[in-house]
Image 1 (cartoon, rainbow, N blue to C red):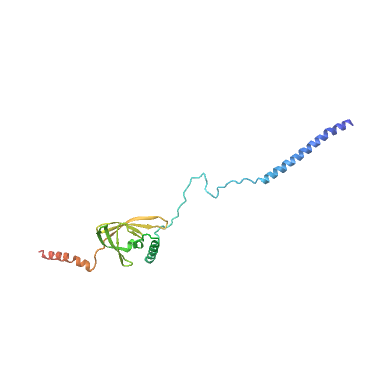
Image 2 (image 1 turned 180 degrees about the horizontal axis):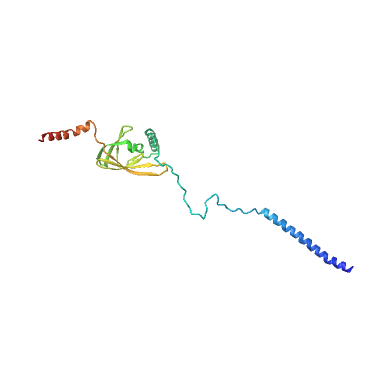
Length: 203
């Protein structure tokens, strides 16, 4: 009887201790599960879709695109643009642009060069519209600018706009237009007559 009482006294605390440990372990497991649910997994960055940071940079290859000059508006469109710029300048009380800004370099012919108090001046004719202008160094054109006037030629700086946005600059020289037709025969008449007479006078 005494032995059974001792077993009960020892067994009851052990049972309580085991129950407490079981409850504590269950609560720890439940808390751990709740913590995992609250904290989502950390996302790692993937470089599969972008550039590898450990790989040497290589510039992108440019395709074989054809690069050419930007198309030039017609003479009527350029004249319309000039008139609009002139009207805007007059409304703003600013200096109006020169009429030559509507002309291309290949649309003019040099018909005369003279010396003025301002220096050399040139007389050019706009072939599409058959009008003449007196121009000086620095005169702007649609695709260039007059740089210098010499005794028998004009020196221009041509600017070509390409389709990729770049601008190419080159030098263009336009000589003084030579007289042709009756004028050239009249100017060369005395000299040629003298030459022929000299030729016939030789034995």
